[in-house]
Image (cartoon, rainbow, N blue to C red; front, side, top):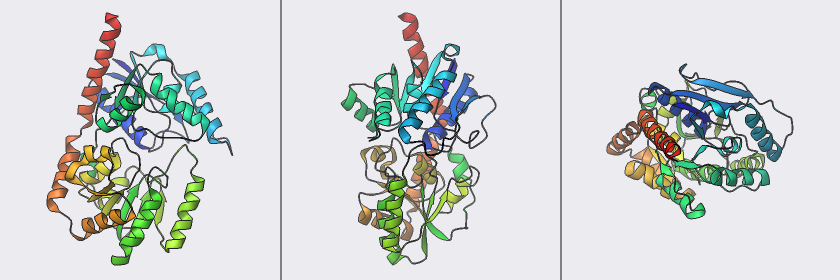
Length: 355
């Protein structure tokens, strides 16, 4: 099959990681795959298997551009560049790329609520316009069905488990709790600050390290609130920003625990990578994360319960839970995800032929 996978960025966000890994796995199966994206700041954050074609549409920064105009410009530039007639399957991984094409499959990784009008409209159209839908968890598929009467096909994420399992633990940051994803409302970053302040009281010398954070959206007000809260608590997290692709597994493997207090998720890829590295993981108690992780992680619903779960994970790590986490991560392969996607695509093409 000739397959186009579309994403909105070249930077290491979860949806971009998913797009590249799925593209490579589909190419290994023998499919002709092209990844289309907007080139925010250059090429992709990592090397890509040469069997995958890359179509990077330049997207120059405009100083002081608002989120709404940036969304519309993103859609317009990708629409102008994309060549739909070259592909049997066009598969968009986010709302921007789904709005940039006329007919596509859409993966809905998670649902969100936006206050920016252009972004809210982008989110809605990217659900109702595609002719077929995929979700990476049954919980999100249920949200889509309940909210829009659409029944997506569920295909779980893959995980590059071997890369994290083989990593040499970093010692650069001493003893630390790690969060990956930057400082954002959806990542529960202020709750994590409060949980860390409680946790540190009983574990002096424990650091909080936050990695990642490349995003299209403007979270300056939230980050200001986060900084204010950190000052009030007297804590000084180490905010690394984007971490080099090759350095990330070691950073994850060196953590005493991995914190994942997100308020909205579709699967929890970063947490699954931490399990692959043998690191205890604590997540927010959400139905989707219960579905994906089961008993392999600890759960918390607020700063106090998150702190308790992290304290238990660090103070009394469970070898059986660590082993279960490694096994769970290893079971989610990109090859399996690619095979399920290919079968789904074939069904869609057969339906078109029959029609």
